[in-house]
Amino acid sequence: MANSGKNISSAVIKRLPRYFRYLGALKARNITRISSKELSEQMMVTASQIRQDLNNFGGFGQQGYGYNVDNLYTEIGKILGLDKRNDMIIVGAGNLGQALANYQSFNEDYGYKVMALFDVNPKLIGISVRGVKVLDTDELENFIKTHGIKIAALTIPKDQAPAIAKKMAEWGIKGFWNFAPIDLHLPDNVTVENVHLAESLMTLTYNVHNREEQEQEQ
Amino acid sequence: MANSGKNISSAVIKRLPRYFRYLGALKARNITRISSKELSEQMMVTASQIRQDLNNFGGFGQQGYGYNVDNLYTEIGKILGLDKRNDMIIVGAGNLGQALANYQSFNEDYGYKVMALFDVNPKLIGISVRGVKVLDTDELENFIKTHGIKIAALTIPKDQAPAIAKKMAEWGIKGFWNFAPIDLHLPDNVTVENVHLAESLMTLTYNVHNREEQEQEQ
DNA sequence: TAGATTGTTAATCGATTAACAATC
DNA sequence: TAGATTGTTAATCGATTAACAATC
Image (cartoon, rainbow over all chains, first blue to last red; front, side):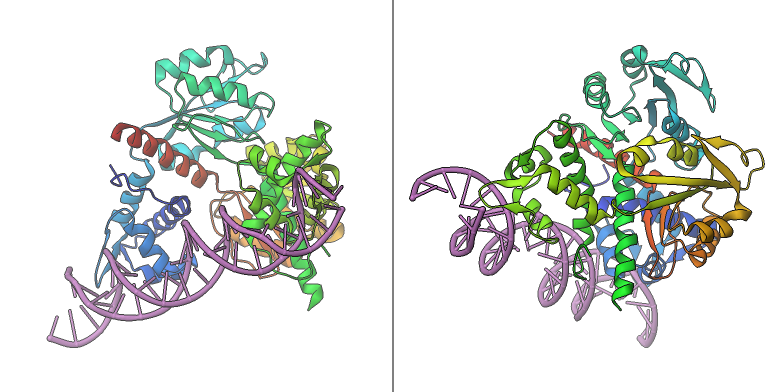
């Protein structure tokens, strides 16, 4: 187990993939060691924060030396569960669902495997996206159970999302990557990661208009 | 001006679109008033937080009554800049770019207008996505300048993103909705809203594996 | 060994929550 | 008016940063 049951704050967890990304880039440049100070300058965070964050999971560094890039990359990958089998399905084979299925990087770089897409639209059922079949939503229960799927992307209209998510949780889904613009209420042992695109765009809009105003004030 | 130059924390800003969404839902149900307490129960946040957040921008409520749903919806929309003209372009007309262009809701519900997509791929240049043309990236400078575009979604490979974003900022883009898995470094008057899908998926994976572990411990 | 840098404790800062007087 | 609920101040909580002894 990566951490001994200690509860890590979600602020820390959300930063881990970014560390992972920077370490991957360092690795690609054949850099073998890095200090928290150097990394902090690249990432524009404090060195303290990096050391604090990492030490939630154990001491990965060495005094006087810093961190071994390769090792730290692997360790953070383990913490994130990327060493485990991460089969997933995509429910909703519309534009967004297909775009996710097409995004190679999840598979090639991080080992996620899209096992199937699902849709109710007869025009979509049967087609393949990057070699992955679109199945009828009727087959969801069977597929989740027989393949032991734990992770599902939800790219369906918001009206349908809560009901189908509830069912899917009963069938065994433990993590929803939710793109529907609605909040899902599910049992405690199920986790939801929201990607609320419209909300993200709105915060951008706020900042765009607000920085303009600030400039005008000066 | 929505706020008199006061600097609002980004934690607050990121919550506004969610308030906006819940108020929109209440409006759709013809509910005319709501107290911070009722809203807090629906949204699963504290009533204190709602009142604190809103009072950064002025007193929208009335003692003994609560908030007028319609009015508060409109006011938050104004704060977010949704009353202003929000023309945007999408740079990168691959799967994700097209999926964004196809997402009606930005336009119909919130008034964003996708003016054009851009790509370097000759197979894509000239096609239309939901009535919006895909143009050659060569035309970017001219298009941004003549249409006064401020907002751009970046859905291009990460290697190309930093260079093109730099150029686009010079040409007038003030806000990037960045889907490329890389951090953009741009002048202070330019704002970047990142949608790092892979990172979001990784935090989900962490939580999925971690809650399993917690259950096993019990 | 001396220098560098971690791991970790202590201090600070900011965000959230509680409380309540103001007032509709 | 009495009851309800805001706006806002004060208290608490948690997250970030600073500092430094430990140690490679």
